[in-house]
Length: 248
Length: 248
DNA sequence: TACGCTCGGTGAACGGCGTTCACAAGAGGC
DNA sequence: GCCTCTTGTGAACGCCGTTCACCGAGCGTA
Image (tube, rainbow over all chains, first blue to last red; front, top):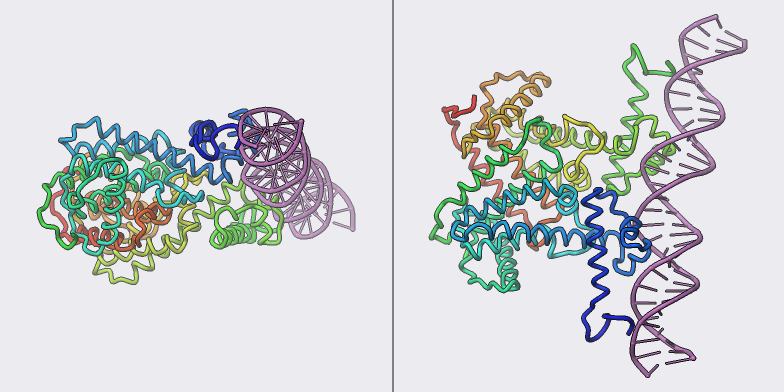
């Protein structure tokens, strides 16, 4: 076929490069001037192009935004992973705390990106490997695998069994993809539930803060966040429970 | 001074009526066709008007949307309050459970409204009495006052003191406004922390579900929510602690 | 009664948005 | 040298929020 990349042998070079460039410039615009500045004309101008040219790479603005979301998400996951790796694997509790605190810090420093990724239903049709799932899997999965996080769920969640099984399968396949195969039984549903619950609490606190829904408190919510973190750390402090009550 | 309402004696009649009508129709549009259908022209057409007429009532679209948010919020609070009042005041644990479950049900049935109110920073400048604060105060405050919720915080949050003090003052003044004066010492910081924490967890779970960020689980997240609720109920089940460790 | 003021509403217009479309270069393959 | 496919363009469409000049109706007052 034509210039480069495209069909058969060479798996896409210059084309995917400009596509990446588009996403990068779009993200820069998002960071610098907020979501409303994320217009096709502005993005195109950033690259010396005109708006219709972008349609050669993305079928719609929503798809482009969705791709940017994926980039942001990957970046966040990478960010958290390096934060975790900076803490010795022998201290999984400290690792979890680093991840959780890092999540808040990142969110407060990247409000526009956070709002775009975590504050709206995705319209671009990225589908399964979506945002929270990605971050959760990459970070939590790595944590579970490397640290073998000792965790006792405060409540044995018998009813939530299928959800946890599903999440375990996702984590296992994700870890396998990343070249870190883990024995199935090493990831206990209790631990999965505990971490998922921690992430939900964390997300709630951070989202409320970023969306300024805690402004009515009229005080710095950081101490509140610290208290939550301390509580989580306390939960993660327990020794692993031997029994596998109800979930295999 | 023209037709009706306006300045001195009669405190606004027909004018505020049409303003209310605008908000109501706007909300209907939001519910039926989503946020992107919330355009000035569409809202005006709904009332047999043209777009510029709306500027006689709201200085901008953002202000109108903000007003709609306030309406939604008030409606949610009222909704939850009736749910609570349906449960006997002698069982505050069941009341809390009803409120929490009702919040999720409402959010899933009013996704567009939820996303608008809880998924974006408010741009209309409503300011202090904003969304989460309103709902939290109206429902939690009423619960604390009527049920005298017995609660033991799992961690005594010494560091979060000022936040809780601030929230307590807000609750007290809110209750006083509502004609339910409560003795200050009846609302213990422990209980406030516990309830705030429950709301944060709840918000996290519901927001993630509404924003479809749990879709990667590929299973119904309701059991997970139930597990969280059971855990919360367990926390609320403890008897009140006598000590007032570190917080007034 | 007639003036004048203000309020609530209009139509036209502006710039900007996402999106579509016909069309023009340019790069290989034959 | 063509033929084709890719990548980009400019013009246009319809819709958006917003502004502006204008206009009739209703009222207080002279």
